[in-house]
Amino acid sequence: MNVLEQLPGPENLKKLMIVQAALNTILCETEWLRYHSFVQEWDEGVCMAKIDNGAGDHLIMLFSAEGSIIKGFDHESQLSPYAQDEHKVWPGIYDYVPNELLLHLEHEGIEKEDVTFCMWRRNSDSRWQKGKVEIPKGAEDGSGFLIGAIYQTPEDFVQFAKDYFEIELPVDIVKKVYEGVSITVEMIQTINPDCATEEVYRELESLGLI
Image (cartoon, rainbow, N blue to C red; front, side):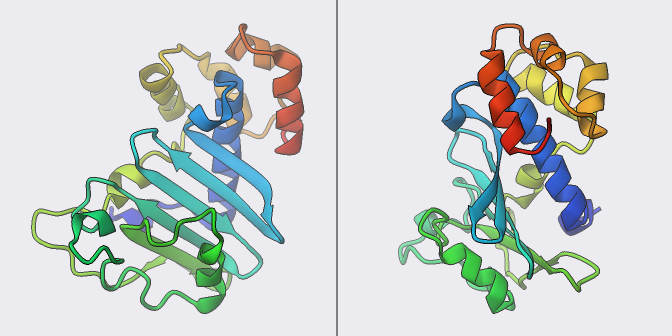
């Protein structure tokens, strides 16, 4: 299965990212250290989800009335602007991206030129699309491992938390969060007894998960 086929539709992707952002909020009180995050009103009419592995790689997902766009950056990829003498976006990455979606990447907080792959999907499209990019033999654009950091099952997230946060999470509670059950104070305390429960609860309210 190729990377585009691994991606769920925009609505399901958005729900997944909200769930993972909520779990990260409970697991990690320091916002900039969170692996998955979500902002409901990042810009007018635009939600933003982000994956940041803390090692210089990121995945930014923007959801709008026009559609959705994903910008990924693998700092070790040969397609990175920093790996080239000219320091420019690799040819083809932004080709054919609809202007109404590409405009969302112009926001100063996005760093549009820090990119090794881009995917998009208008709301009228039946599948995700990607520009025609010539990737050198033996090179990768980072989409495989970054899209792989969108954990589509509770079990996958539990394994991630064990590896990244070194925490054993209760699978039954994580399943409830994935199923859309409203998160309670008891659930928060079960997942992370050491967190500032009231502060976490307020943050989760802003994600619409309470």
